Image (tube, rainbow, N blue to C red):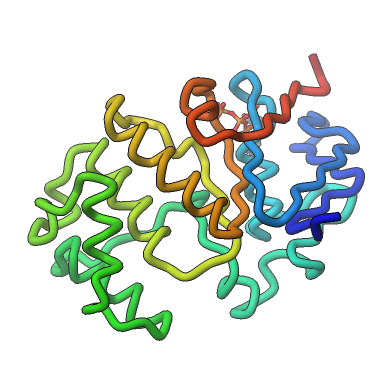
Length: 211
Ligand SMILES: Nc1ncnc2c1ncn2[C@@H]1O[C@H](COP(=O)(O)OP(=O)(O)OP(=O)(O)O)[C@@H](O)[C@H]1O
């Protein structure tokens, strides 16, 4: 059987007296894509934040590649996420940001991988632009490119389809499908079933335990 990339055991998330997730169990096998779906406020982002180690569950345990999440550099060597959007360096172009990510992860920025990702996401023409000048959909594609040019084994994505037009959604779905086909694991939150069908995701529906 596939080794699990993510294991959540009886995870509870509460904000004050309000219980959002109540004893949730989750297994995400390595090399698969799983989408958290459900109404606004059902706890998708909260669960993603817990899996990323950016928030502690109120109760229960989470393991990512058999380790507690968020625990340091080693964790982030394997995991790339859009759960918390990074701030950009104002003076650097799109291309320079992506090169920075590539270099920081020990890769050659001239190895054409950046070009390939930018072509696939339709942002190659924006290489010389500054992040502050992008439209919201372009910024979303840039954010996804910054995640994809990082070598990783697990992507944690919060509504990656948000603000994308139909061709861009299809391009992002194809890229995520390729990522999984190459052995990567994806856990995401989404409201777009067509997008999830394009990726071939298993879906898990969350519903607020206080409703
Ligand atoms: N830091 C916080 N403090 C208090 N309540 C919070 C906090 N973060 C989230 N919540 C509440 O927890 C509930 C779940 O929020 P969450 O963002 O996890 O839901 P979601 O399923 O991702 O929603 P959406 O589909 O709108 O993105 C919401 O009612 C939200 O208001």
